[in-house]
Image (cartoon, rainbow, N blue to C red; front, side):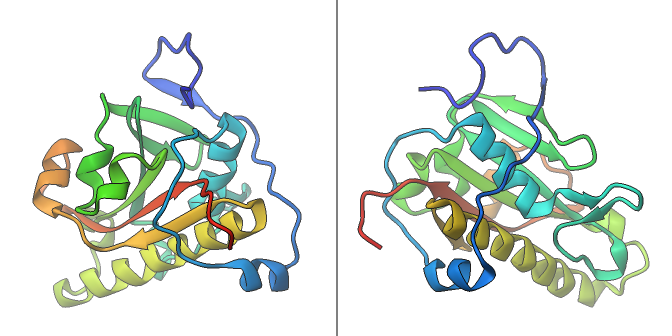
Length: 201
């Protein structure tokens, strides 16, 4: 079953307003875990919206502030949503998806077998052009820290919503960068698979 509307005839998809599942921080932390077995069941559009907003959405519209911190306010991490229908870039300011490439690229987001069937794989890409005033040796480290903050937001949302997730660094970065048409100044930091699991947590 498609996660996206069947009548999608645009390269852009405005997401519904995010509605997060109610859970205390203590409950989310107690449930937080990594899962590598995913059912093929798609997430709903509402769940996709909430996952992306929790990851790196705008929580302070007046300033453009995000749900995750970023060094010096660069907001250099780009979030890509890779699903069976294609790869999309998340626009947090507009809370929408912009199509990057049609077709199923999920298997390219990692080297483990399960990534090809997980319904959603997020890819966190550092855009070094946004870090223009950073020392070259600091860029990879700072972008990695920022991507880690985003990944933990996703972990906590998934724990609260009863979804499964795992963050991953085993990636053929050259292959995935080509698949996503990344620029030389854009580097893949991490990826994260999301879906449902039949395992008892």
